[in-house]
Length: 125
Image (tube, rainbow, N blue to C red; front, side, top):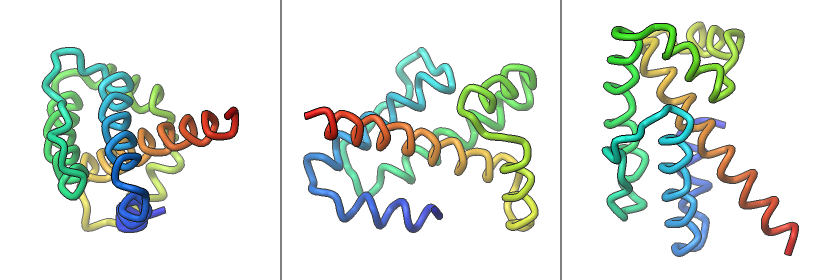
């Protein structure tokens, strides 16, 4: 699923649930990437949430890659982004930077985790 498809799916969701999904995605990213200083906070606007996430995550990940490559690799492992999937995206979008593609994949993966948990909770009711 592409970023556009993800955004379209989210915008089709009822507003209150959409806010919950977005807030949980922010929390999932904090946990997965190891952001413990409280700097990643959802501002409450679902229309700009993806852009807010991206604008925070891309420089954060670029810095992490430059400063601590081992930790960056652990984040990719923890988030469950395989080398094969990453290489496939890099070949498919040669105009995009490595960090941009990784950022998109990490945000999407956090969204997938949140949606899976929400669907599981719904099915348990």
